[in-house]
Image (cartoon, rainbow, N blue to C red; front, top):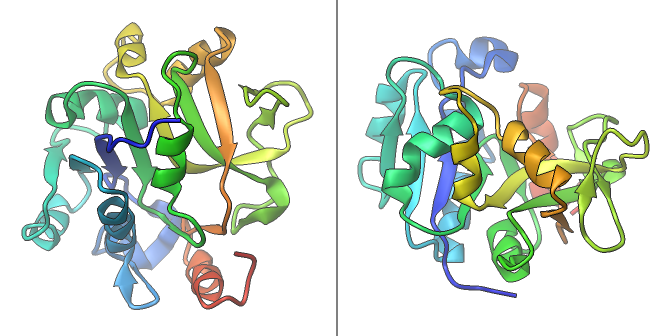
Length: 234
């Protein structure tokens, strides 16, 4: 409904423990998939979508990421003392992101098909939404397993705790940043404001019209490369 460029937060601060030895000496966003670091896959999406500001948060082995990004047109939100998780990290970066609805993107995934950030921008309607999450039916979520996150209703709203969840959240979202101010803690997940927004009926989902692979583990690298090469759904 609105395709203006929005500010974007790329999450890149985590320890990547599920990657094992691959992240013993490097941050997960620098793990390569198809010859390119994961963070660069995310930055390519941002460049194509035309986001007016892109912020990357860093913590674990931050110096490596900062050095990698030094020639990129991004701002760095350095979480020096502790990892703030997705919600706390996004709120801490708001002064860099600027006003208005904010996009957020996980850096540990690859995508095929339409740009997920463009899909979110085109579906955003601030008159009825405070959160918009990109989803896939569980069977199309490569590398994720069988656990579903949300039930997507006929009117586009999302729900959970129903026992009928059939869609997976695939790491791209938008939120009204005013909703972050309601959380008193410094460290918190985006799930907390999402739950409040769901309860108010202002949380929506849109289905990604392409493929996605979670690259949270070493095994996910091969799956992601297969997806990009057209050997898996996408």
